[in-house]
Length: 208
Ligand code: TYD
Image (cartoon, rainbow, N blue to C red; front, side, top):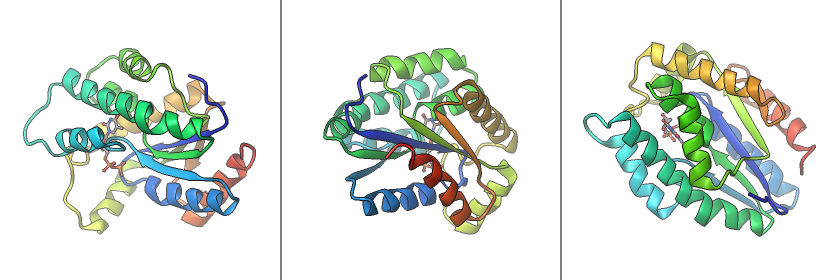
């Protein structure tokens, strides 16, 4: 896909890695520099996506791994077509929580599907759309779990998975970042949120 004048930045990382906090801080910083920012997320960044999000996160009982991968891919297809691509064509900055790397990490490594097939499915769904920059907030899942516990919100289906699942997801994210160093910025998410924000701004300032 062509990405005319817009800038597309995605945030990835395990549950409790602080993605939403950092995405919000970055969005504020970029709008202060005079750009129009669109904050969005997957799953659930479109009207159809809200319905899909409810299934993937709150369905009681199992969802077959391939069905789950297809649901995330369907959410992504509609989101890119109706939200992300139009915003980029208007020249906006899209700041997004999670994208296809989450599918590769969670459905590919965390579950039992082939990582390349999961990635290809998302690429097909979106016509090959990839962000300019992906910020990976890397954190030990045990530390992240303590943060989520402190939040006091009930766990969704994926958060409730075992520690070993989250360790595999973390390794998968790191492997993705190693494979595409030019697209990824990896930051240690266990440090102070303001320090993390400064690192992210330094990289983004090369792009805005
Ligand atoms: P969300 O409430 O957005 O959590 P977080 O703050 O951790 O991003 O929940 C999204 C959940 O969906 C999260 O556990 C990861 C999972 N997920 C996948 O398994 N595959 C995907 O492709 C995406 C986008 C998310």
